[in-house]
Each structure stands twice: as C-alpha cells, then as structure tokens.
Length: 495
Ligand code: G3P
Image 1: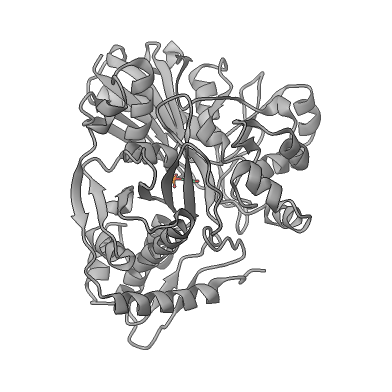
Image 2: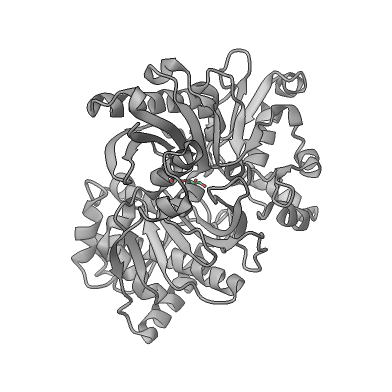
C-alpha cells in the first residue's frame, strides 16, 4: 500500500490530503463550509454539512489523482477542536447546529464558575482556564436548551462528541463513539492525571456520563471505515486535535520544542515532556501526541483571531480582493505609521483571557491608508504570538530558542520575518507546511506499521527556510510597548 489519507476538518474547510511513504503530498482536495452567526459572539456549523464535505473531498482526492482506496494503508483524522455536537444515537442526526470553539454564548456561565471559586480545581484537573472556548459549557448549554435533551441523555439516547468523534461515528456508520486524549483534553471534563473523564467536573457542569465517548490513544487502530465511504474498508488509525497533530507533524517530540500554526487563529504549543506542567502565566496545559499509547504534555497559548483578521480585511473592509493580496498591500509601506491593530474580534485568548475584549485600531492619522492597516493587521498577529511565547518562556524557565511555523499564513515571508524580528529568535518553516495533516498521517501510519517507528517519521521533516531576527532590540522594545498599550485599550470593551 502506498498512501495514508489524512482528513483535516478545520474551522473553515474540510480537506483530504494523501501522503506517500516519503511524506510527499500525493493529492489535496478541499471544500469550504458555511459559517453561521446567529447572534453577536455566537458561531455555529452544520454538522451534517461538515460530514458531507469531508466525505466529498476524500472521494475527490482519490478520483482526481486516480488512486484506488485499496492503495490506502490507513486514515488519520485531525480536526478543529472544542466544537461541540450532540446527536441521536438511533437516527445519527444532530439535535442542533455544532457550537464552534469561537462561540462565546457561555461566557456568563463561565463567570459564575469563576466567581464560585472553581478555577483552581478546573486548572489542576484539566490544565485549562475557565473559558467559553472549551466544550464542557457548550455541551451543558445544548442539554439545557434543547427540549427533552436531558431526559433523552439520561435514557442513553444521545451522544456528545467533538468533530473527531462525529466523523468517526459517521465513518463507521455508528459503530464507533470514541475520541482521543488530545481532543478530550479540550472539553474541561477530562482529567490530565488519570487520563479519564472526571466525575467531579461532570457534576459541576451537569453532564451525564452516558453521552460521553470512549477516550483512546491518538495513534490507535479503531477498526475500519465502512466500505460505503471510499468503496473499500480502510483502518481508522489516527486521531488528534489539529494543534496536537501539528506539534507532532513538526517533530516537536522533545521538551522545549515549540510550533505555531497560523490558521483562523494562532496556536502555539511547546512540548514539556512526560509530566504535565502547570502554567503560572495563564497558558493551558494540554496533551502532546507521542506516537505511543502514553501521551506527552504541552503548554499551549491559543490566540483566537489571526488568519480571520486577514479575511476581515477582504470581506469586512474590502481593501483586498483575495487573502494573498495582503502581502503586497502591506509591503507597499515601510511601516504601520505607528498604527496598531488588536484583532480581538472574538475576545482575547492567551495570555489575557478576556472574552469581553473587542478589536481596536489605534494611532490613525490623516495619513493612514489601507496599506498601513493591512501591515498593522499582520503585525497584530505576530505581536500576539510574541506575547504567548514570553509567557511560555516564563513558565519553562528559559526563553524558547526557535519557533517552527506552519499553517496558511506561514507562507507569508513578510509576516515570518516580522515574527522573527519581534521574537528575536529564528523562525523555521518546514518544507511541508501541511504539518497538521502530516501529523495525523504519521499517527495513523505508525499505528498500522506503514512507518516503522518515530525515528522514521522524524527523518521525513525538513526545514525549507529559516528567518533570522534582524530588528534592533531597542526597536523591538519600543514597538512591543506600543502594542501592549493598544491591547489595554481593547480589553473589557463589551462588558
Ligand atoms: O482550538 C481551535 C482550533 O483547533 C481551530 O483550528 O485550524 O480550524 O482554525 P483551525
């Protein structure tokens, strides 16, 4: 068999990517899906549309590249995390749109949890801060708001899952109700010490255990997908949240190695080894895939708005026609003219954690043009990453020495150079920037013996370009000081 198929179900699109044994991409197919915004701060997806688009792209990547399903050794799944689906076990139909990770509808309930003094126990058990971002409060909301949902859940008729579980359920025609430890670690219900659902947290969130999936390792053969999916049964052998898969795909398998993925948001993860490290700087402690059944741990800084700020330049402001145009527009001016844009469109994540923050642009003068705003948007992405890496360095006791980058905007040389400048450490871009998908492929390939061991998958990773810092320390300090002033202005806006 020649290929591993990675299914990468992201916030804005479903993708299917084929990798050969050398880690080369043999085919890609992608399809965007609908973003539903019922109210300010609410974001939903149609879970059926997600499944159908994922199935469509998987079929397309095979037909476009004339590859037979029998040539695929295994399927690896990776997904947008935290997004919450509840479905009926009999019909397989969702009871409601999926509530997306960006959705803020449970912010008030999170305030209650905070005020009632639960932050300590939640941080200790789950490694998370209390925030509407995670699945637990979204699941509680669904059980409370959908008529009869609680009674049906108590009867065992309902299933909850993040997108990985939802896909695995559909891929197996309802035989599998499972998740992996990386996705489970984003629910606020999973105990990082015991690596199991936690009764005390389930009680706190009023979630019945009957709805929860079984938690499995990330590199694990669950069984075959149904023949209906691609015409032939194929082992479902890898499953990890997209950021965990990217950390693995970047070969950040030893402590202190860090990566950032520039997607809808930015997600910086640093491997901390075999024991969880509690953050003193408002970072999350989460699971890092190890390729073995026992996971490693990571520190994570989640930034909610990054690539979506560039989309806003395109769709909201209309100053660029396509996202790629941002580079030439930003490069048409030498600097932002002291303009700073904080893209807190969905609140601020790490290390500020303010669901009530909103975006600001400060420093506008009569001479400010769309080019300055475009440049300030790119810089705003890099400044957020720098804030997270500072916090990581503080937690780890020494600064991060290099940052591996991937995701859509990592191809933007202007942004990568500014990132290296502002961090004052090298930024390393790999040859294959599809690291999320290749991470899922590695997990699946290791489980079925397509790749022999971790050394073999590590030999596949190669650097394409290293961006060395070139800005003076004084300049960095001045700009970061101005940025922090801008961040202060964005905080608490919608409270
Ligand atoms: O935690 C949310 C994250 O997993 C979403 O990733 O790539 O779909 O923006 P992405």
